[in-house]
Length: 321
Image (tube, rainbow, N blue to C red; front, top):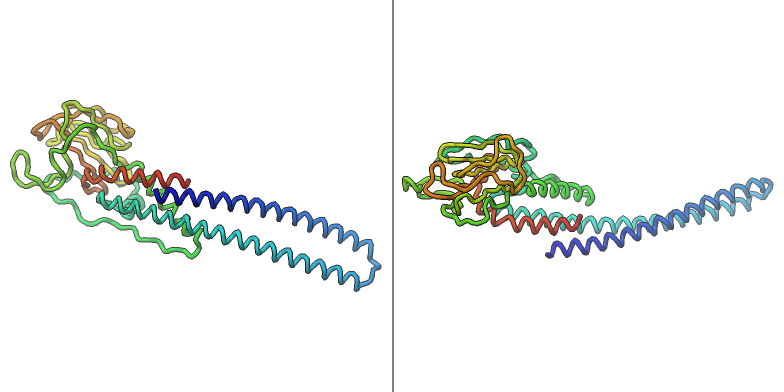
């Protein structure tokens, strides 16, 4: 709410400055026309007075130069004032942009991400989401993420603003297409992400997703738009769907009673990918749901918690545009 109010105040300042620029431009146009008429008339008069005394011509030229210098100084002062106001607005907008980016970054950290890892994944491998080996239960994922270094801050506030706004726009684009939605409406968590007691062997095992128990044949939805990379039987997953959302994100949907999509199919957010079931290595009706980023699993529950905060920040920022 605070960011939104700040953007509203900044918008009002921008409108006032636009009016001042328009008025100044009109005054400058009138001055230019006057100077052009004056110089034209003066030139014609001088041609008619070729025999006039040199001293009189000198006085006229001296007066003209003095008036012209005064006009130039006045013009420079007005332009300097406008430049100062524009720099003030650019500085305020830069501060709000940095605040928005910092707020998004804080929310992303709660989901196991950061703005740097998101931007780095896109910059270093735009098609990163097209790959990703299957990691068997009990096998730890690789450690370490590539981090994008911060660019040097230019002294010019307009150049810095351009860089930061570009970063924010790219970040918003990534988040808008990230899998923040829930795959099923009515559910309860029957098994959490991380280490757990295996439901069949009762031994300690890794669990790279969450089990969302619910009604048999409940529709399961794509949590973001993307391309179906795999659809069908997949060992312990049973009936299974995997979607590549781009920008390094993939989601997996397991134990479906029925698969409703085909490999290669393009999906929109919310499209039905299958129905809840208990196929594969399962003890009861539920959806096994995984989120992967840059070939590493993330806790889906953290994504669910972060979703509302991300959208609120994006909404406040959208009011500035």
